[in-house]
Length: 344
Image 1: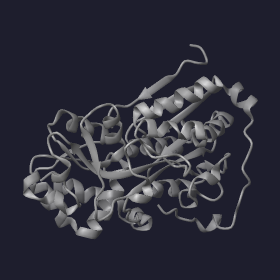
Image 2 (image 1 turned 90 degrees about the vertical axis):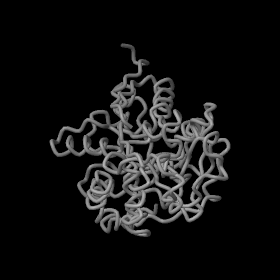
Image 3 (image 1 turned 30 degrees about the vertical axis):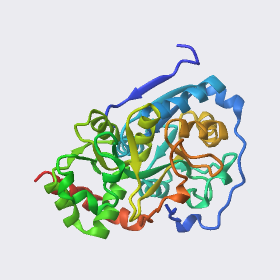
Image 4 (image 1 turned 180 degrees about the vertical axis):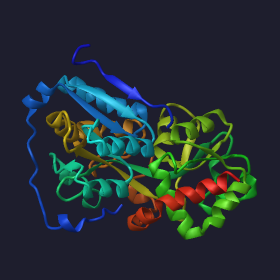
């Protein structure tokens, strides 16, 4: 296989930053990547839960530019973290670069000294709230949660406009929702909604015959086929990508506030390809790479990149805050209670 061949290990299935006290006040200047050393390593392993097509596009662009082979491991966010943590516990890191949408887990990994501080060029093009000051992570893209569906089956005027609308009997049998035991994004959504509306809200959803699937890929496919024409709180980038491909699917951002979750990039400590890892981290933040996200319906992290075509800027969407301290403390309980409700 040539150095330009892209390999892929694909598993089917689918913010305010927290400050660690030991890191407060520390700063690092933006660093220079040793390009020659990165090319000599010749390979980089990237773990991510990004939509496969979008992740592949970034990996291909990197490999074409630098001639460095990319091994892409892509699955649901919870599964990515589970694999990464198992490898870390065994002291056999497989990933060179970790992209995660679970900031609580990222901070736990920071406390375990799992990452290398690295501030790539254009670090300051991402809002400071979505970066760790020393470069232990930097936002790569933003996931904006929406209620989306088939516009030819449920006209936009008839779509649920708020979270509580989802429990309306007129949507019975039409809804699909992702599982927080599989996708990291949904952990935050379920935790915040259960705190705001109580678990009785999810009990009403269960009575409304909501179908639960592992991740966003499955939810989108059910909307595409019309089997479940409304996705009850999914990653808007899946709907945007489908719309850009010609599907009659569009987003509704809840009027009572939705959630914006950064997916962050970290260079793994003890990586087998440390220089290629830094080069990949820098490339993912470049204007070249960031501009590829909107083409796939994804919101880029950089403030100087336009939103996906036909989508509003993040500043035009009502966004509710995520309490990451609460999320960290309640994550296991949230997953357990969700499973109990929807297995009944």
